[in-house]
Picture (spheres, rainbow, N blue to C red):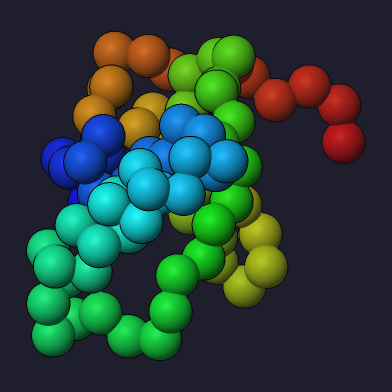
Length: 81
């Protein structure tokens, strides 16, 4: 739903029940038959650096790369253990 972020995913103020319901309803409408269960809300955290994607095999990280939407923004090298 990232392409519908402002209309169907992001609720800027949970105290604004009318807007929250409008966003949730739009998400439900867009998901149609793929909608399963209920809604989960979590706080939005603005990233302070590039977003990283990781791939894990048998409990160990084997690859760290940039997000596909921003391939030019490489994540910072990991420091420490």
